[in-house]
Amino acid sequence: MGNFAWVNKATSNHLKICFWATTFQADIQAIACHLAREDDMEVLVALKDPEQYRTQPIENFLPFKGEIVQRDTLRAWWRLVRFNPDILVVDNHLPRYRPKRMYVLWHGYGWRMDHPERMRRNMSKLVGEVTEANERFRWQVVGPFDRDYTTGHRAIHKDNIVNLGSPYSDLLRPESPLAKQIQPELVTDAYPGIDMVKRPNVLIAMTWHHGGLMGHWGDEWELLDKLLNHIEKLGANAILRMHDRKRYDPDYLAAITRFCEKRTGVLLKFKSDSPDSLVDILISDMMITNYSSFANLFYYTGRPTVHIMPPEAGEGLVMRQWSKKEISVEPVDNQEVFWKHPPEDVGGLRALSFDELLQSVKKAIKEPYCCVDIANNFIERHIEKVDGKSCERTAQMFRQWVQK
Image 1 (cartoon, rainbow, N blue to C red):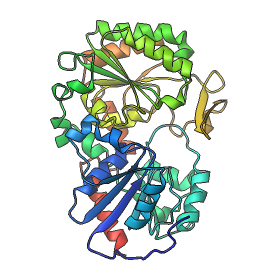
Image 2: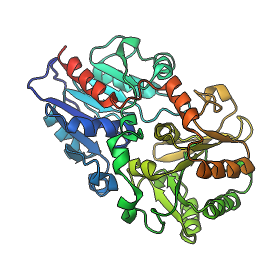
Image 3: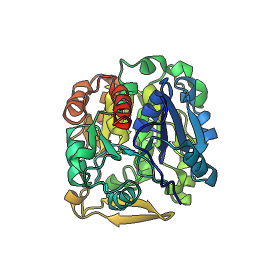
């Protein structure tokens, strides 16, 4: 299955760009929305659930102007073949299709090591060897460390890498028109049960890879209850943003749903039900995370982030993975094969104990500018040119690439 014919130059004045990704979020969402507004671009996006995305509050502020099809269907594959894109943009989700050119925007920066060996092999089958200089293939990185990591650990040839920064940062910077436009009073209907206008919002962004959020400090439910009580006493709301429902055990899903429903000022959200997170980030006054790559994105806002330190390798640290519709849990006994960045290297506050977590949350709510310098320091070291022009640079790179 595949389209084996390809040409080296665009056949019309319009560039055809197709995005075929796991989720329509972050850098892919930002650049797709930007390109769809360009006069010389035609943009097709394959999503898991297009109708669900169209109901998200972001559509009122950043409507996607291109075409959307339902991914993982035969109809979507045939639409891809007929569309015949000049560039196919992916994260780690590849269609069975041989494009003219393939462009990778990895899903998240993060701290954990990724293992792209299988993806690398599959990409090479579709566009030719990616560990060698290849004019049909490009991988966008967000900064100097990401570039070195991609040439080293991911084994992508240096000539195939473009360092253009993070398109998502264009939307999240405090100076961005979108960040100024989206205010809590304009999205209250999308956040039932919490007072968005009079109370600050605490976004709890949990990676699912480590299992629980605070279980290494004691009983998970008891500590979560104390944390939410603490947030409520500080006069704030809590938005718990979880991953897709399928990544959690049914008993856990039932338990956390009951747990949150009986509380006031708490909203539980799953990615599978609420696929867009951009509005969540922009209306939140601070973030608590157990090292989700969401944190890297939140740094662009300049608002406080509190990082819950996971246990040490060999002392309870686990890695949960999703493969073949199953969840595997593997203990981690080697720090060096788990962390690509040391967990001490963050753009916010770190909590090494539950008491430190409570103190940090209080500080973040009472001192909303306490992490500006720390976040900016992380960004300056890791991210290329957070200047609001990353989408423009990517669009111009696409034009130049196709005309070679």
